Image (cartoon, rainbow, N blue to C red; front, side, top):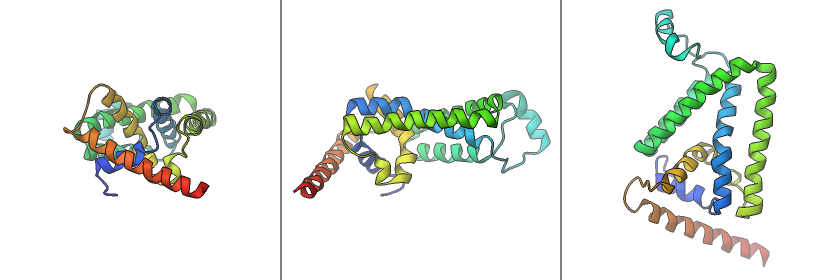
Length: 199
């Protein structure tokens, strides 16, 4: 799968998310998983020390934010999404950085001893919701069982893209119809393999 091939990424992910209730469940739970993961990463040490002059200059705007692994994960996600699609990716990048800032602030308020418990509870709740969505409504195992990295990387962007699609957004004319054709083909192939295993 080409790294920045938007159609291929969405055709893969979309083949596992066709049921409207499952899609809605993912829209509710995917971004909190990303956010709470960043809460834990807020406790990692700084990987880059900014000069004191820059820190003082930025402090009134961003507070004591640390350029730790949470920041660089956020930066990676944001840049990847922008490379996939400039408009939707830019919105996703802004949301990623809002999550980073918010998670850093929450982590400072909670402290590690409470934060990891909150994160664990939130992650368990959100993952359970998604597995219920797949088991009860989609009737297909999650994408992460077939492609772990692609599912984790694309999930936040995919659910945002789904929301934008409801508002009529399309990165270029014919995108959705071309992706839907690939999704239908992938689903038919999966059903065929499933039927062969049953017989």
